[in-house]
Every structure is written in structure tokens, then in C-alpha cells.
Image (cartoon, rainbow, N blue to C red; front, top):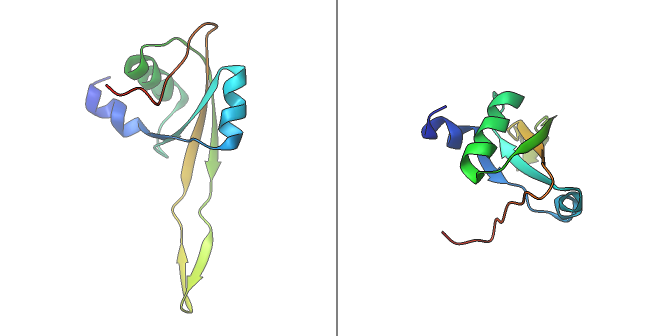
Length: 97
């Protein structure tokens, strides 16, 4: 998988209180492309962060319908990937590099 495709698969890390608790179980959460598959997500995380991925779980989230000044709109659909790393592996999102 080329490097351009890797960054198309992984959009951004999700940093919330819930994902911080998941970090205790060696899980990290990423916003990913809605077309990305589990093997693509696994390969992207392994190549970008140089870690060993144990498992990948995905959650599809449908966009909400919202109104603004009487006009209906819709938020985009999103997909989150819960990535479990092998024992002893970590990802540091705060590292400058």
C-alpha cells in the first residue's frame, strides 16, 4: 500500500474521555474513510505508526439530520476504527516529529 493511500485511510485520531479509557486496554480509536476495510486499516496503522496490530473493530455512524434557520441539512456519515495493539506496543499522539 503506497503512502498516499495510507493517509487517505486514516483521517484523524479520536481523542475523548471514552477513548482515553480504551487506552487502558491498549486500544486506540481513529476516524477512517467510510470505504476502508479492516485489512486496509490494519496495514495503514502498522505502517504509519510502526506497531503490531492485534485486532480491528469498526463502527459506522450515520450522519444526523440538523436544521439551521429552517433549512434541513445532514451531517456526513463517519466510520471509526477501534485498533487493539499487541502487548507492549503504544502510540504517542503528542509526540512532535
